[in-house]
Length: 196
Image (tube, rainbow, N blue to C red; front, side):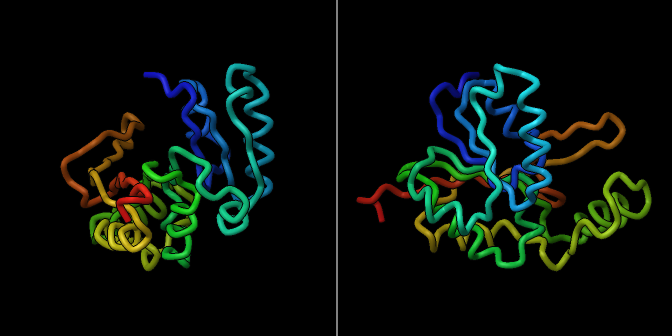
């Protein structure tokens, strides 16, 4: 698979894991994060591989600041495992959509707001097997797929696909699932100007 020439912004990129994977397959990636420390780590890591560093740029910025300067510039917005840490989710999604060109795609992944995700994503992951630091997640910030879909619709996007994602801690791998009970991904497309 090649993403040659596709302009992607990774919102909440952290240390750049997803940004680098996308850059490796040809995308022109901009990773943004509000944490200057994480952006510095991402920059240092990208410099280790010239094939990645030529395709990725990291910016220390909030989504609000960045979207104001980069409106309608990107083919794709990705935000993976970020929205559950955001308090103003409506503003966050609106600003993500502002970055998209008409016809562009937005991909969001996040835990669902279910008892299963609370139990496995917080209780088990943070307090039993300790694979995530305690206090990382606040269940009150978890969000249902229909809530994201509604917010995106109000901002001119049409949801194309909602799919389940499951994590296997034994083999340490994520895989797609027909169940959205634990985590899910959502793909929506920004309507073209004439569609709105």
